[in-house]
Amino acid sequence: MNLFNQIITGLLPFVPKPIVQKVSARYIAGPTLLDAVNTVRSLNAKGAMATVDVLGEFITNREQAAENTRYSCEVIQTLYAEKLDGNLSIKLTSLGLALDHELCEQNVRKILDTAKGSGGMFVRFDMENSPYTTQTIELYQKLRKEFTNVGVVLQAYLRRTENDVRRLLEDGLKNAVTTNVRLCKGIYREDPEIAFQDRGEIQRNFLAVLDQLLQGGAYIGIATHDDVLIEGAETLLKKYDRALTSFEFQMLLGVREEIRAKLIKEGFRLRVYVPFGADWYAYSIRRLKENPSMAGYIVKGMFSMN
Image (cartoon, rainbow, N blue to C red; front, side):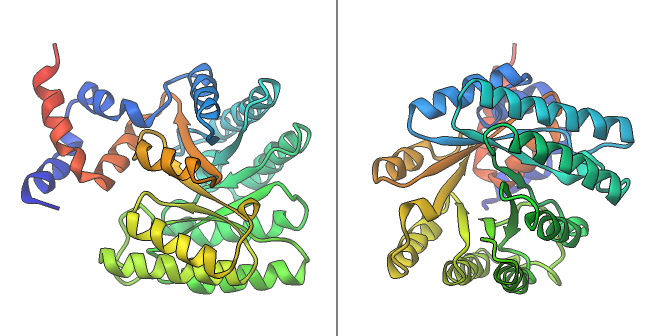
């Protein structure tokens, strides 16, 4: 990261919200479910699948968790009714994980039951920062024994991830279920004691974990925009002669669309992460910090506001 980008990234919390919204608009479908539906429909027309995320993980009471649960079910039912090629990603803290574990499980079960009744639509547990890693994995393991339409996310920058994969694969084998994982780098700020900090270390661990998942027969969502990781993944997929239906690439809305089109043209399944909702600000700040090259657009936005 050059010094200019580093300075702008550090100042993000002080950048006026209208500027952040303008710069980050390409990463978010919009504030409404209709915006998400239209975005998924457009992606489907270009040969991409989608996974929809209702923004708003930072809640403080049970009523918010209940509303997020209701809205998640509405998203599922709408995608199914519109016959769109998409599924749902959920953040467990938005469903009450930080308030009451049992409450969260009850809410997740409602969502999975709704998805099961909507063509068996798939639901992915997004991974959040490290205080919730163990709880998220354990709830996935518990519910995967009952539901076939659920998966989890693992983050390659966490030092624990190889051990998590080993346990998930062993658990899947024991219970005769296919482990379903989205593998990403990880975007939350974590201490060096628990997370790799160097880009090269993260890349190496990503490919090591991907190799581990491929050997273990997992279904994998390979979530990356990194050329090194895309090329490394293609090499591993050839090594294990993986069928095209046994994995997919995944990318964020608005990021490296030319690479997305290239992968689709080459015949790969590709899913785009489509966030929407009124709580766009925290998501936008995280994504802009992850992508410091956007600093120039922030400065441009500051000088082009009316």
